[in-house]
Amino acid sequence: MNYITNKTTLEENGFAIVESIYSNTEIDQIIECIAQAEQNSNSFHKTKDLFAIRQLMKNIPELSGLLFNQKLITLINSFSTSDYFLTKAIYFDKPSMSNWFVAYHQDLSISVDQKTDLDNYKNWTFKKGQYGVQPPLHILQNTITLRIHLDDTDKNNGALKVIPKSHLEGIIRVESKEWDTKKEHICEVKKGGIMLMKPLTLHASNRTLNDKQRRVIHLEFNSLQLHEPLHWLEFMKVQTSA
Image (cartoon, rainbow, N blue to C red; front, side, top):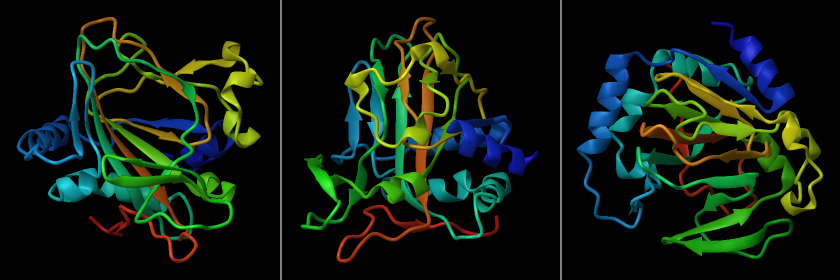
């Protein structure tokens, strides 16, 4: 497994696909762990089109030992000589009959522990008991997203669509049409594989068309601390060995 190639592809194109990070047995254990969790907090959100768990590692800490196997740890360590830590974890389940879709966007918001007046922190939100904010650009540029696929995902059940290299343009006004959907790439990922992505990469997903479930664990990592007194809401150090 060539992690250097994956890192280069991520930096150049804004995304990369890494197959076979988890075995079928490991995926089954992850799914069972989530299924056994209590679902009575504000972090659990369920509709006919989407089931989501926010602050996933805080709500289901038992997942840590299952997710951070040796392959994932090696992949994370290949990002940089800096120590990356977890800043956000969400579980998404797009049911087989889901009509839910997401238009093209960039991930511009991070989750923080409080609201405070700081230069270059803007567009504050407060949803489901947690604060979100758009941080300075260099924080977003340093973020790396890992999407762990618990099901085979293709164009028919909501695989992410991306605009390659769009992360190099900084923050894009989506309504301005300063980008070209003709360059669109569909990121099909097999069960047990991972999609790496930079949050400034324009991405979207379609409705499910083939009656197949799409379950994904979305993890965000960074190696930079926020400006005091602000802190990452979901900060968690990454273990360096399995």
